[in-house]
Length: 148
Image (cartoon, rainbow, N blue to C red):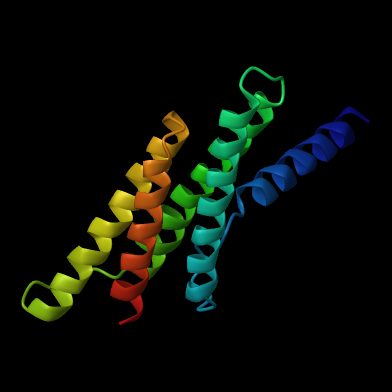
């Protein structure tokens, strides 16, 4: 009986670990990618962070501020996950320096993704709407650098 309970508990923990680690897109090389969807999600997360910041500023000392701060930080984290797990790990491919045009494109995409991650972090740290403006601008630039 004890062995069965341990097996059931182990199975549940394994399932929880596997299902909780599947995020925006797994790292299995399935070849199914939704690049334009991920860009739209980045814009959606930015708008959600902006709304959260505006609510935080409007509420002043209300108990609802905690919910909006958590919401703001969760969406900033989702931006970082898309930038890192999806684009940097899977979609932006390393390019040899000998192909100067491709290498410049690669460096530009990496640089923009790095900046997107930084401004997502900054949006966690403050309620400065300039960070939101910069995030939108960077995603727009990345969108053109990636799809052009």
